[in-house]
Length: 283
Length: 231
Image (cartoon, rainbow over all chains, first blue to last red):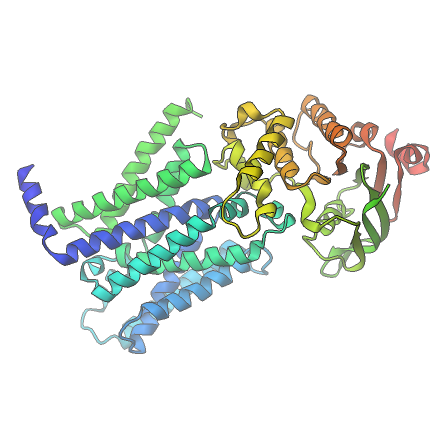
């Protein structure tokens, strides 16, 4: 035990480890809060689709030689988030098919660009890093940490201010529209928030594993708690604890950060599932 | 009696598909209008148009004096999203007040009071902290009714409130709606596929078909179509 603590203390002296932990916890917090809404609105896959779009955008930004690619990725991902959420209901191509189409399309474009135009010798290593986020969280620049902090604060602030509206449009869009709530505007807001979170989360878990951060905390909390507010709170705590533990574990064991966090999420989901079964008497 | 909402020469439908034409009728305060007709006759579309969720293809809807669009309480058909929704009864009912608070982020004391009162009227106060998804179909409908009451004390619009309920619960639901109509003086507009059950409570009937019938319940009973439909 002492060996582990010594090792941790040693690691905590490096600023990049502290940065990684801060950013990781913030991302986990943001993604879990919105995750509840996404899961309940049956939009779980939007996170997945958008993360592939973000991957494509990242490749495009790299090819075009942007040094700081985050704004570009953010812009492109937001545009697609709006497109997907807005056309969700009445589009000619139905929601899930549109998501699948855009997501594989972006993945293909991203991989192609990275392969053809790459300047680095290790293309498959680069691709792997973007997809699974192996080490990027440990190599964040100060600028990125700040940006992450500010964006997370915005996401949390907006969520807090519009909490009741988000509940209303999640539970019953038709009713909300009938009593004069501008549902379209709030859906747009949600789309932008999701895009921001996806782009942030790419740093932590890479683009293929983002959905895990969105889905597991929400589903776990929903197994056990019975009101929207308690589900949101539980989901946030669940996500932060899992992300923190996952990151510590990955530092100690030298495993990839993203995959470790997701596996901790899965184990915790199993635990919550069990609690839910016990609590509801097997229902 | 003063008119609360009047539909003038409405044409309903979507894209190129017309569901109903030349629909005109007026609802007055305290009326209980029951809308009946075959599936696909445009009943739900009419409700959605009255609520402003959808534009009429032609004609117009005029709101009476002192009525506003967002002052109509709405009980939509249940969506599958709601069946396993983790929300307490209080949270759902309180969301009926969202039209009152506009951009203000949180509900105030008055709105919480309105929600408490609505729960008391629907006799679900004891369920306030229960989870919506754990309730029976009849209880869920009471919760949604309470939510609609939070949105309006003038008019409620109900889209097949008894679908999926067993006959006993359906009967209780009809009595509850009738009580809201009589005791609170709230205008009711209700779609029902179950004509015989619903009509005893209604003051007016709108029968939608290729052409339409609008009149009092008594006139409907005497009409040829009413006799055909009720027998």
